[in-house]
Image (cartoon, rainbow, N blue to C red; front, side, top):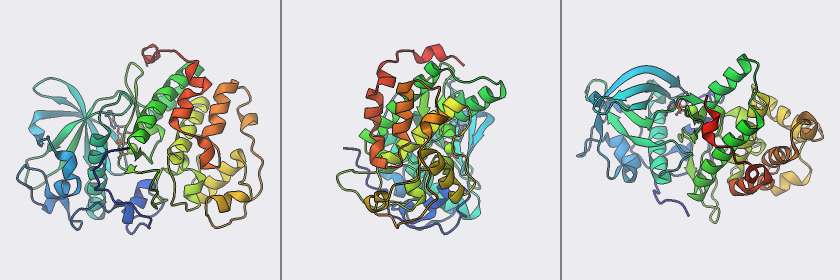
Length: 375
Ligand code: ADP
Ligand code: MG
């Protein structure tokens, strides 16, 4: 299973540089994020290899660069900034020769975060190339390096997508509208297909959230932002960092420190996205890990006694709550409620797989075409 890039080591640890509150990406300053790259240095100071790739990149993601040549920044005309995350700015741009519209993702390089940013970028390139083409995974067209010796920079060139799901949820909230159930199901089916593809290729995304889900004008959903993704092999489990996934979408076991996990972590996040689409707002908007756990247990129920031993976690005592998901979503049709209940199971094994979810009644009964979702 999966693709053999073999460059991305993964082990638990803790962040040296970033306060835990920055985002889940901050946690990747730990051992897991150590690509087999040379010691971190400022990108602006590094040299290029014979093919013109910055050395930090070819050493960290060399396999993934095969068959590609760096393109010149002159080939693109930047139009406007369309997004920014903790580590990147994303611009809408036009390819001068063809007139094609693309998105250019430039990793922010500012002082102490620079080496971290480089690692995320190398990881994202390696994993995206390993994933290949899929309708519901954003397409990476190539890489651009700036020729300016004083300020060398690297951009990832992506297909351009018109929206992200956060923007669509906010627009719905602002207009007092809600997504219809067919719309929700159509997005879910595409999200689950993309996740199924990642998992079948041995990749955990580890940052599924609505701002990382891009949507085209004609309703096609694509998973983006593989900066936190990693390879996993269910037959040879190895410890991984628990410092992943943006807080609101993070499953309880990661907040409790689990280092052995699998597809269940992504499926929890998918459940949070499903709830968000249904409610038009994030379901667990905690400000701290403690508050986050409290919100989760209040709705999903406090774990039973056997949970701690089963997940090999130190036993904690929490206020006992009964699960009350069915009451909160009492107007939801049974098959969608059942999917939500499954994805938001406290026990990761009960979340099943993306394939199980795709085979569930909620999806097989559903035939609406994405194109009927025109934004
Ligand atoms: P980060 O790792 O900094 O979070 P992302 O890849 O998530 O970077 O991009 C940040 C934002 O930029 C996204 O939330 C989205 O709004 C926008 N964006 C990213 N990729 C594209 C794209 N291909 N087309 C259009 N917008 C995009
Ligand atoms: Mg992002």
